[in-house]
Image 1 (tube, helix red, strand yellow):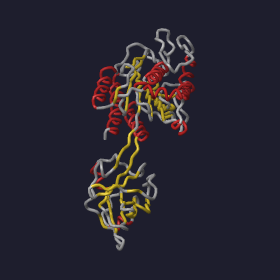
Image 2 (image 1 turned 30 degrees about the vertical axis):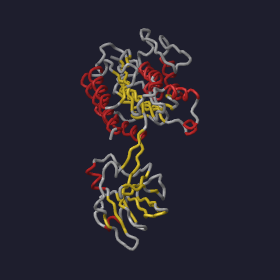
Image 3 (image 1 turned 180 degrees about the horizontal axis):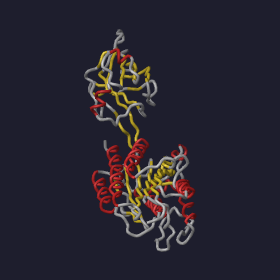
Image 4 (image 1 turned 120 degrees about the horizontal axis):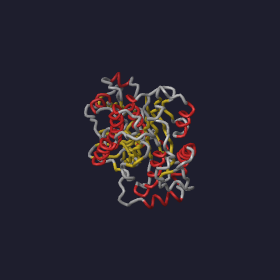
Length: 403
């Protein structure tokens, strides 16, 4: 067991490159995308590395596709392979390097365009073992300088990891790193503690530090990051389906459970517009947004007619939480109408929620690597907390992508 007790959860996030990079990818990225397997599925891919004084990719270096079977596979791996290592030592930077290397090597087997790649590292100690002579050198196509770390100063490895976080790309996408540090009471070397956090994070993306976070909070921490990830690689479009209203009819969607015309008129959160007909096509025009409600649609949306209904889609919709239970959304969302010669709102009692009349989530491809500390300094009673936090994290991603 190491002398310093420290819990660190690191979040390495690969996000989109700049707009220019998206439009004109580098030659290496184009080559990588061309090499992607033709039968590669769009979705989420998850790999896992466990480590103590050594490290092992328990997914075999091949990230698991997160469908129903993949979810079961990952949960089984967590339950069966996440066991405390009896040998002493913590190879934090070595394990982080293995994750970075395996992300790079997996590129040809992943979708050609990855919106984001996350590498989430959990550890309860400062690095003490990454430069051990017994560790097998990591095969890393990103280590273009063929740097060797065995027997060297740990600082060399630490600087390499930081440099790779700042400069490495996975299928053309830049890397950002998040770190959540949970400091034990016996940690006195705050300089080393802060340097570890900085080397494993991007500017402004550090969690913990001034406030201690305990093992009991791991699930909440992972859940919060999962929500951020979902927000990062999903795009919500609100879909409003109406009858074929007459020209000039005003339509208002409210989002606070309003029950009468007065409440509808005074609603804080709303979306309102006017039905316009041009060249035998419906348009929703003069759109206004109230409260936090907003969409990139702007002030006009073209409708699509199907079976006597008109569908209006509002892309990049924000201001309402569509992850709420259906019963809550049915209570809060209301559609109101007002004819061109009328002065009061009339509720549309036929309006019904559902996936087609509610919202559409557009999803992007993602690669996630979890780097899990199993060193002897982790107590047996904390093992279930780590397992539950990780499984809940993966479950949240699965649920969000397959809703």
